[in-house]
Image (spheres, rainbow, N blue to C red):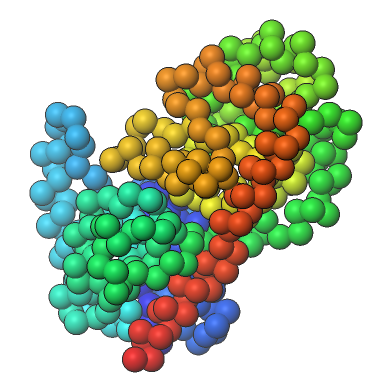
Length: 365
């Protein structure tokens, strides 16, 4: 049994892909899995660390603004398509999975042309152009949100949720004290956890930097703040970061303990972040990034807001409103309980296993 998993570019694609591979190996230890990613992207580092082989394509996205890099795009696409066909011919997979990202297009096109069934894993509430094109020939499309039949053929859709590494959410209720101790937090104070991914999010950092006086006055509340490696120099020595009730870190290496310690979570509205928040089941505030294709993070966030499972603060309003909103939620126990309970109901803890079963069913067929 051989499976190709293709895509990546960001942690939101790479880690779910690895979770799918792990689930397949758990069900079928004899399965051979090959990843196909984009040269120079995150997957080329993370996939080998997870114990899987990977091949890289010379591929990148087409820039929406005028840039010289677009001149290379046709050549990259041709080179990647040729290499993808070579990989498929050599590996001879039984099924190919696309998780999103630049490499998935050439790889799934090559697999489909060779008569190999393909599966899409669409993480967002609004699919990108590549997945909308690939969906025409896909055998199955695993989605995380209801109502995706407005974009994909209804008979192909399987509602699985987005895969999340189990260590992120398992046994959180028993890790709170460990989390507070690990991050140097006070057990008597309410805790806000704010993060924008491993690189960070400028808007969230600016909102924290603007809240110095507000947080100085609220000694009953503490903040665990992941600044992000990209913004460490700009924000790690600001006045907010120096407050005694703020723990500012460039990077959080134990997300499970951060979630366990938190009473409220603030983050962007990427697919992986939202999936983790659902599994964690804490009141959450989403700040969708405006710098993404099709504004899909806003659509992700609204899917939760409509179910009263999270609050949303627009990116342009975050600097003035974000920390005020967080404090209002912490003060309103009824609202906090409702948000936490509703978001927990949307959790799909077995998403990776459900996707693995879809793949195995296709192979068996």
